[in-house]
Image (tube, rainbow, N blue to C red; front, side):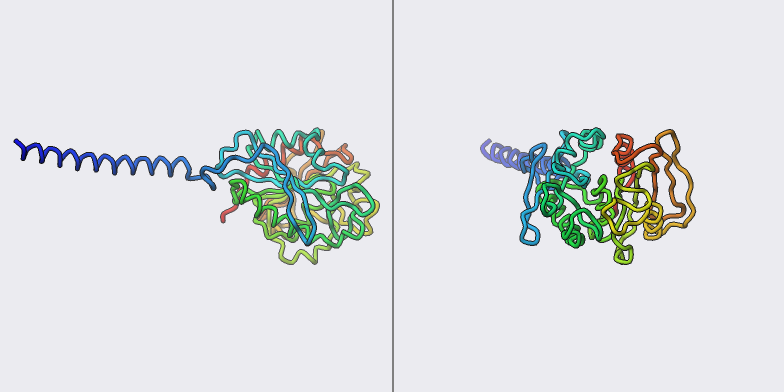
Length: 310
């Protein structure tokens, strides 16, 4: 009788141990499944919007990050938004009528980074650097500004769970010009880029290491701030919109033939053919120096088509 009891206890112990191991395996599998796409399991989520400071070339620089309400700590697409020339660039992002914030953050569930440009000497305005720009003597800092973007994305990746196959960038006016400066010099693996109403004013001869990146660009035919042919009045040199897009098409390894891919009473869009990376120009037929909600919609739809293979 005592012997049978001992055997029974041993068998129960073996069964319990086996069940315990199976339960541990199930728990581990569930944990791995639950957190497989999370970069930092257990880390509290950052606020919906927050302003950060980063040192760059002995100066304190500023950028804001906006995360979507649906952010769950898993890998999330990231969009840089480069502001126009102005006194309160972050306010422009938060309140502009194109609804970029609402649509990028919520409809497309993306993290948006809004870096602050350089403060123009002798003014309260913030601007982006290019070979020719409104930043006066700070215009020569354009490559350094691109390196700042690389530092920012590295820092953001340590605070948020970003999908490095889905990094995008766009901007309006001064920011549209700077988007092209970034495209020229960046080491960031952008999945796609876009811009609006900002003539490129850095010689393409300097873009020797520019990678083919899908590029969508908008410009108003009646823009009297950034003229279609010669850019802003204070620029000694800027490419016409057509000439810049031709150069981007060469970098993106396209033929020089184009076809109209969209035409309505607001815009006419033409894409270069046989490209390694898509290259599209949209002419805003009656628009001046404005940023339309239609541009936001097309930028975000465009980004949503592309991801990088890392």
